[in-house]
Image (tube, rainbow over all chains, first blue to last red; front, side, top):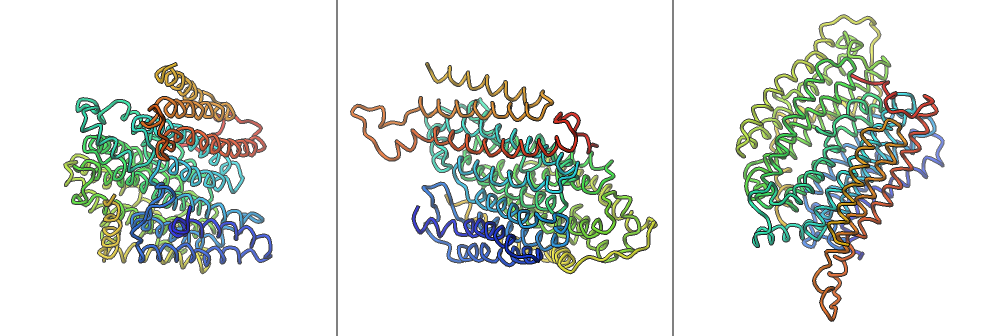
Length: 500
Length: 117
């Protein structure tokens, strides 16, 4: 490890150091609000290093013995993660008062989890990927159980068991890919698979060219499905969202999912671009996407708890994003960016970040006062808190894909890329599901605007929370009206990915 | 001893672990089953690195290049990382089991039905 490696990994180091500093600050200051403030201000350091790397764009961007790459794709996700963290910290300053003595640890664990996500976006080697994944999910399991009441600890245990189980599946897949290709580096896996394709070791009759490779890739993707919160590893999602502290649910739904999609896209581009393997991966994702959307939407319809409903909504949203991933993989030559698939996925992930954070922050603001997660308790919220009811409505309309929000543009990009890649049936399933999701999203809006409140007390938020909700909701509308800036950003990020 | 034999052992262990993780209802038994799955992974990783020795290390005289050594050791490195991460996972898992046990007096996951629907 030399100084150039340290330069490349500086955002992650800054993030981990910040987490350590927060624990120390928590010990010495008595006013715990300073801890949250320090965390938000401290995020400037990783952001600064990320921006330096973005504008410097070093030619030699592979470090740590080839296990780590800093391209614009990784930096795009790092900016997303830092942004999500800043918003979540801002929104949860009041919520954190519930944690009493454990406020600093809460912030620090979230920062450690973010460090893992930032490493994951840069990993180009399977062992690095696994370690980054564990660094992402272990602190998250502790965060889910942070309230330490019945529901929270139950959710934490479920999260940890599911996470460990999917790690084991993922590892068995990793080992088989390693055994089959003889390397864990993405760059070498590509050349080995190409060699085998050229020398006829891979057969056109077997899926993925060989049953051994199929076994490896399918297990690997099933393990990653946990992070994406898609079928078949979706069982944890509703329970964890319902039981965990709401800021943690917001964090998991956006950052953790984005990290999962980052590594999936990199695997498809950098490790499995072989046309045959890529086609079959695309088919795998197409099926998982269709099932995810349908399962999420059907289960969401009969929910009465809003956090649980958002859990099922998240499963459905994972399905929509996977339509884009399937389109990437299914377009020939390992996802030529001509189909618009990868840009669409990145655009949707960023837009989904704004949208879901706005929704969760509005939920935090309202439930902080009502102390009740039931949808029925949102009745008449338009009168009690016109601001948060309005912002929540904007977020829900974006999740539904209603113009002129960012959710509409994202869905337009993703479904059109699916059509371009010859996955018309999947685009149709996606649109039908989108339409069906109106039922439960609009039911919340109807409850807020048309039903009568049983209580006339006005509800307001604290200043940081109002600011965070306002910012994210503004982002939803601005990016929906003028998506070109974000689309350009995503295109630049994807260009970096295509160069190996 | 051939690669196939070792992989067979590893696959059987993995299957036993998977069955245990899905069928057992005691949280500690589930953690132990997952541990068995991790160890199956370790066996497979070490077997692959032992039996697929890269060119250069099988020639006589052996020509030791850094790359060849790296490749030969990847599987063993993987298992070291897996052992470490699995230990962390179990430590956190047991902590959560204790929290749940203090609240409910049981660690049976079929009783964890505070939330459903």
